Image 1 (cartoon, helix red, strand yellow):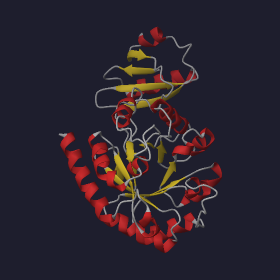
Image 2 (cartoon, helix red, strand yellow; image 1 turned 120 degrees about the horizontal axis):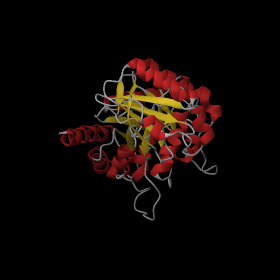
Image 3 (cartoon, rainbow, N blue to C red; image 1 turned 180 degrees about the vertical axis):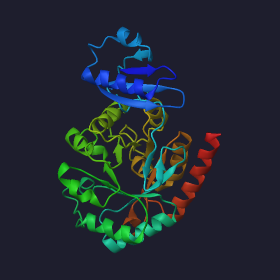
Image 4 (cartoon, rainbow, N blue to C red; image 1 turned 90 degrees about the vertical axis):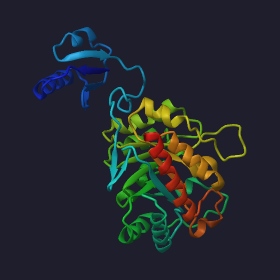
Length: 331
């Protein structure tokens, strides 16, 4: 439920109204815009008398929200949420670029790859969960101490780092990371989401292979309900009957999510297509659709054989062209 307040309501009146709602067992989410102040009411609102609230001198109107996601809902928070990650702003209207690196890199390999990524135009690094990407019978390589690797990078390169979490037991590995990431396989791992909700670090939440947009937003709600509202939604392709691409990049998800939610939306191009040749057109298309960020697998070191990874030159070319497209649609 949301209560839209009348213009000119004082801070004292807002505080008094907040205490009154809290006395009814509701938590209050306050959103102040240039012209409108909205009080989002979370809890059991079934017994709340909307006519009584609308009769108050401070309230203009009351609306019940039927969607299962509340804090992630744009009705609760009309202004776009901007997430500041070490001076990299996601959701401010510009487009950011994230380079995914091989989680098996040693410290020195990762340092060199991080330098290359930043030189190519990346504003953030992403390390996925190595164990979740391989069959137990595929001869998986030795997994390095990722925490030590991140510390080595931070000593040499000034760039935010996102690291994928697969279980609540992994939480101690995130001291060195700036951003927590939840992969597609864990989008509905609600125990994990609730634990992440207790942290204060920004979160990248990837859509699952068969997850609906509502299910993605409900998963974001599980994080936000714990107190962490720094959630970045990620469209990374869904499973369809098409075989020419690894997955199907759902470009329509980007504007739809922006309509439904105030949270930033990024697109993981490499995992969606699985083909580096498609990275440029799909990244440009995502930029035209309003994506707040583009994630690409960067071809360095052991990732040279990856068919979805792009070279440093291609990464830079994509970032320059996508930025130009974003400037066009902003006009």
